[in-house]
Length: 243
Image 1 (cartoon, rainbow, N blue to C red):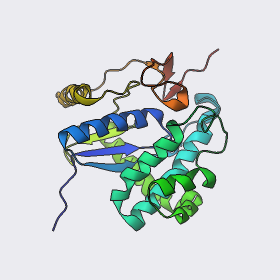
Image 2: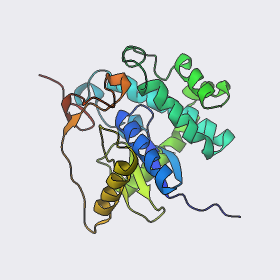
Image 3: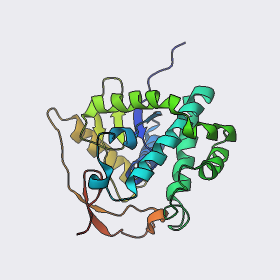
Image 4: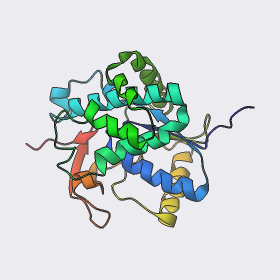
C-alpha cells in the first residue's frame, strides 16, 4: 500500500523565527483545509557555509545557526528511529522552547539553545526518548540534512532563506516564505494562503520583496499577538547592523 503524497512540504530550521511564524500560519490553514503537511530539514548553517559570518551577520548569528544544525541532527535521528510523523510534535516543541518564552529565558542566554539542557525537555514535550539528545554532536546526520537543504534550494534557487514550502509535491509550486510578522487566524489565514498560492503559481512570477519587517509576534521578542513589533530593516537574512 503506497502512502499518498502530502499536500505540503515545509522545510524548516528550528532557530529561524520567521519560519516558526510561517509554520504556525500553515498549521491554521492545514486545520481548515484538511491538508497534510510533511516537515523537511533545511540548515541555515549549511546554507551559509560559504559566508564569512564576521562580515555578513551580527555576532550571535553563527552560534545560532550552528545550534539549529545541532537540533536538526536530533530531528534526523528521531525521524530515522520513530518515523517522519514525529517531526510535527518535535518542531512544535522546538519552537515553543525557543520562541514562546520570555525574552531573557532563552534568547538572551548564550550557548543555551541547542545544548543538552535545552533539548532534553523539548524531547520530553514531543513524547520522544531523551536519549536522542546524543545526536546533537553526531555529524553523521549532516549529509542527510545537506541533501534536504539542497533539494529545497533546487526548487527555489539559492538566494533564499527559510522557510521553503512546496504545495502539491512533487511537481507543484515551491517558494521561499512568505515572511510574516503577524499571525493570521481562521479565515484570514486561509485568505492569505489563497493569495500566496495564486501569486506564486502565476507563470513567470519570480519575486516580490521589501526589506522592512516588523519584529514578529513572538514572546521571545517581547511582542504579543495584541502588539505590533518594532520595524527593522533586514538584508541577506539578518537585521542590518546599525552604524
